[in-house]
Length: 334
Ligand code: KG4
Image 1 (cartoon, rainbow, N blue to C red):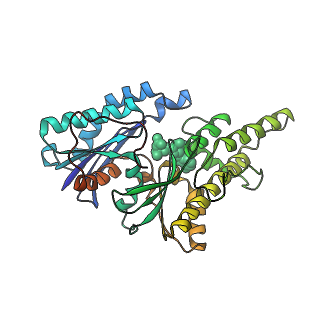
Image 2 (cartoon, rainbow, N blue to C red):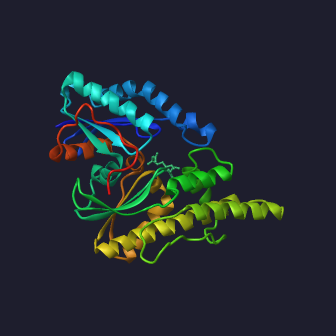
Image 3 (tube, protein in one colour):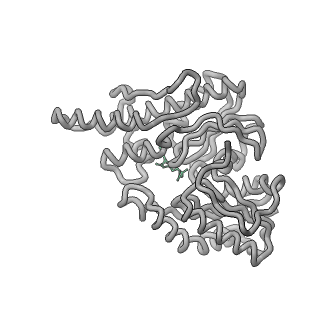
C-alpha cells in the first residue's frame, strides 16, 4: 500500500510517499522561513501564495524521489486542520483535485494526530496507551493516545503556545523568526540559574499551560537592565527562559502520566527538537521510571510523512472524504 501525504497547514509545503505504515520512500519539504523572517512571524496571505507556487513541484519531487508515479499511489492523505485556513486550502484543494481526476481515495488528517503518531515513523515506538506532549508554534497540548485514531486531550495552553513564546522572546531580544532554534543555541553558553523566571503551574493538578506571563517577565527583566544601563546577558536570558519553559512542559507531562497511570511518554511538534527539552525529559523519565520515545528532529517539525502515516490509520476506520468537505482552523481532537 502506497500513501501520498500532503501537508500545508502553516508555512511549510511538504509531501511524502509511505509504503505500508513503516517504510518512508520519500519526504520533501520546502520552508518559507526566508520569506517570513523579515516580518517577525508568519504572514498568512504570503504563506498561502507561496504554498500555491510550491505544491506541484513538492508533490512531484516526493514521487520522483520515491521512484514512483501517481498511478502507483493507493491513497492520498492530506492535512485538513488545524492551521491557517488559506494555507490549508492550498494543499487540501490540490489533494481533492488529484483524487478527483485519478480516482485515488482521499482521507483528511488532523495535523495534531500526525504529530502524536510521528513516533511510529521510528523503529522504536511505544505500545498504546501513551501520553503525548505536542509542542509547536501553534500548540502546547498533552494527549492520552489509546489507539491510532483515539486521542483524549488532557491539557493545553490557555494563551501562547510554547513555540510562540520562544519566537516572541527571540523577537524581543532582536533575533529573526523563527527564534526557537536561535534561543536554544544561545542558551548553550548561558547559565540556566542566572535569572529566576516564573514557572506557571496554574491550579493544583492542572495539565494546562500558560506562557504569556513568562514572556512578560523576560520583557520586564530586559527593561529593568536597560534602565540600569546594564548590558543584556543574552545567553543567560535564553538559558533561564528556556529552563523555565522546559521545566513546566516536562513536569506537567509527567503529572499526566502519573494521573493516567501510563508508562510510555512521547514527544512531538517543532519545539520537541529542542535539545534541553529532550535532555530534561529523558532525565525525569528515567527518575520516574517512564519510557520515553522521541522522533528524530525532522519528524518533530511539520512534515508530510506523519500525515501519510496517520492517513493510513484514518483510512481503516473512516469513509473516504467527500468532495464537498472543508478544512478547519481548530483541532477537532478533544
Ligand atoms: O511544528 P512546527 O514545525 O510548526 C508549526 O508550529 O508551524 O514548529 C515550529 C515551532 C516554531 O515556533 C519554532 O521556533 C519552534 O517550533 N522550534 C523550537 C526549536 N526548533 C523549532 N523551539 C525551541 N527550540 C528549538 N530548538
